[in-house]
Image (cartoon, rainbow, N blue to C red; front, side, top):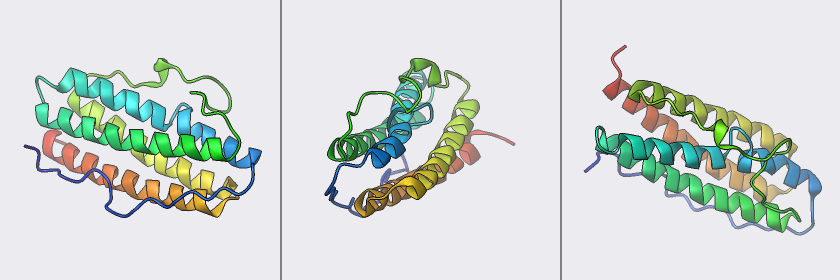
Length: 167
């Protein structure tokens, strides 16, 4: 059993209240939803890592799977925000369709954990930029709540790096 038990904050996610269609809000959300550094990429990357680490590092694989599940819930909430804002949640960022080439396929555990830490830090930075582009206050509240989960993931990855990577 893993010593990590919490992969998402116990704070509730805010209820979306979208009163008007906003193309600006849709555009602001698409890269976080399914761009290069997105929830889609995180889900696929953590799933891949879970599969390849399952035998040699079962505890890490289990953690990655649980974080991927949290990212799936973020993905679903972003899709709902896109739909309610009048958009279509296709698996694409603003500039191109999502591709499996965005997944980091390194297989060394320490490189995996460091790449995942960088990915979470990048996601937080991207979300903070997104907030500056959003108009709908309930979507802003949702993104702020998602950031809390991403910050928890940063702590988990830092702890795993400390535990598994000698440096």
